[in-house]
Length: 276
Image 1 (cartoon, rainbow, N blue to C red):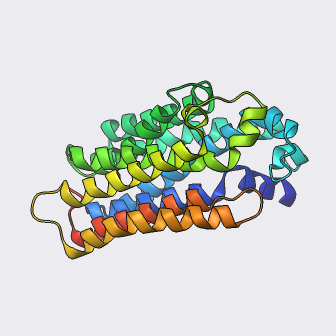
Image 2 (cartoon, rainbow, N blue to C red; image 1 turned 45 degrees about the horizontal axis):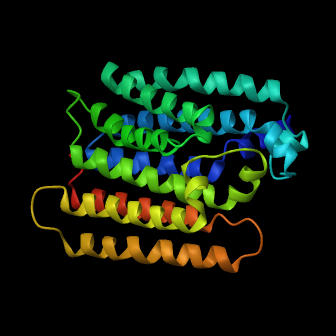
Image 3 (cartoon, rainbow, N blue to C red; image 1 turned 60 degrees about the horizontal axis):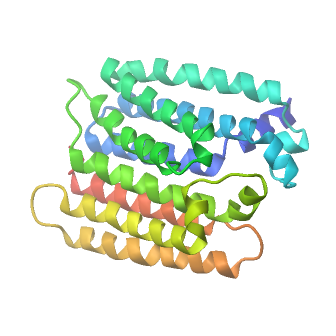
């Protein structure tokens, strides 16, 4: 049982799942949610992240086995495909049910984000529009957080746009370590068509654009903290990609750089009080 639980945890893509959940909780706190509201947002986002991560490993099980991915619990037999399939269903059903605590509009938005992410796993991952689900799902996250507030206020357009840009950048950074393995198994998403150099450039530009939208989108002049965040959006990805080139083998440094930029952006929003 303990081996199976550990396998499920590893198959959930725990690092990005935890990071996105923490970001959502911070955003909820900054938007003015009560403690119960923050908890409801965090649980909803966690359930969605679990569904997406488990679905990804379930769908990619044969591909992962073909390229010898020993870091995947399904490939090593730590968790079976039927068990992973049941976990996907439970997490996917739990997502809209938990989101209903914020009202029907919030639940619809959370469901949109989940469905979009699942469509990336199949069939959009191997198409030229593979970036679209990332943009939609990331854009839906702050929209869900704001809509879950009492009265379901409309989320600011600049906030949704910034999140969508961040998600698009995350897509290009996330795929970088897997380009070679994906090519061997026939995956041809947009990053694969652009290649490593093009994907790095796309990720850098999109991350910078997301931070600029957060800094200059709200009313009023940008703060020094905001301008510092723009500088960080330039420096952190560059350091991440340098670390990735220096590391031997598969490296998630580029994607971790995206997570760092996302946390910086959210902390900027929370401390400035400009979420809504």
